[in-house]
Image 1 (cartoon, helix red, strand yellow):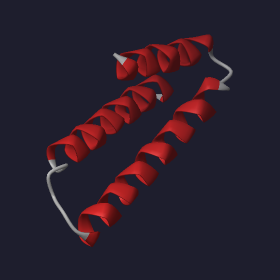
Image 2 (cartoon, helix red, strand yellow; image 1 turned 90 degrees about the vertical axis):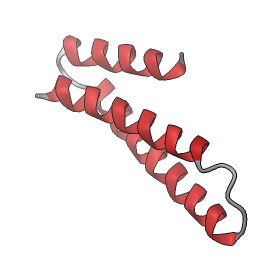
Image 3 (cartoon, one colour; image 1 turned 30 degrees about the vertical axis):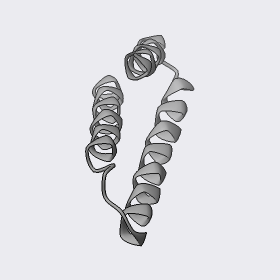
Length: 73
């Protein structure tokens, strides 16, 4: 269950970051606020991944490292 949570968080981070790249051509104040909201969401999801890195199970910790490495590719 915790491993699945880590995978889902990784997918969410990827989707949110791709969404921000696709809507990068928007102009104005609304686009700037939208970008800030997306960055806050990504930051909170990374915080969740870091919390899972302190998990008791080594399998979960390994999955966190794998997820972060996939996101960096």
